[in-house]
Length: 377
Picture 1 (cartoon, rainbow, N blue to C red):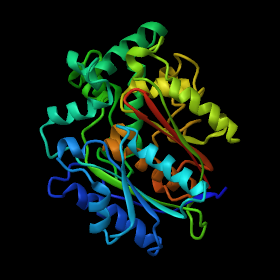
Picture 2: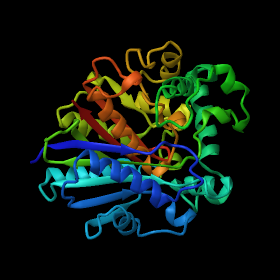
Picture 3: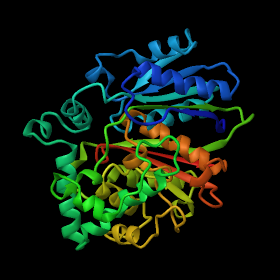
């Protein structure tokens, strides 16, 4: 089976792009990627997106983006797996290249959420959950996060003041991240004093609404590559929040770890993790499910500096979902691009010392889909 390399990446800044369309953002990321790789022949383009059909009345993104980017005639498709769309698109490209089906696959993640009312964007973000069972009650991803946070704090006698070190870490890393939406530090006090969103979750403990696009060229050809993808796969389950015996577990991640080990990669040896840290409780649950922190201890370890950029296990090295920003369907592509920057030594002031192996964890909702990608030098 073919090895899989990342030959080039391209990203737009994450933020509020009022003056630009979804296609504009995607084309910018594509052109940066293609120019860096000197315009090789593309066999397939996969566009990761969650909400364009609902928010912008625009589907068929593969055709439109390929045409506008000068790739008319290239096979193209859209991949949708809610917040995990980007990670699933990368896993699909990885599988197609490994099997020998295609040589060069361009993965593009793009999302545009700021051209609509905030309540409409929140409703669209929340379609990662069951519309008939969960959303019809008036719940959304923010209210679910509040429930899970209360469960976590009660079960482990954890302190919310420790749990919110996750957004503090993310913002500290975003300060020197050129593509991050929020390039400013915050403190625990800032989080605790920010408006309540869903008790006990505060505004600064929740993901922003963001626009952005990221692209990367995945190839069997190592020429000029910046990184190698040594594992990429995803697992799905029932909508886990209400259907699992333990709402604080993420069975899809547990399954991913099994296949990761079968692929010869030891999770304990990773140098950094690009984390799906949309909410602090989800960051803690993910680290614990991966076996990178003991159950109920992740918040305390975050407070003690273990996950800082210069700590034992750096996380969210360019700001994560919280501070880099959360263009939902594109987020998984940003994560893998950032991981490639780390292992190639091109992370600038965000460089993790001696980074050789990193993983990107991209979740749908609260884990109904879990994508995990390993990137090495």
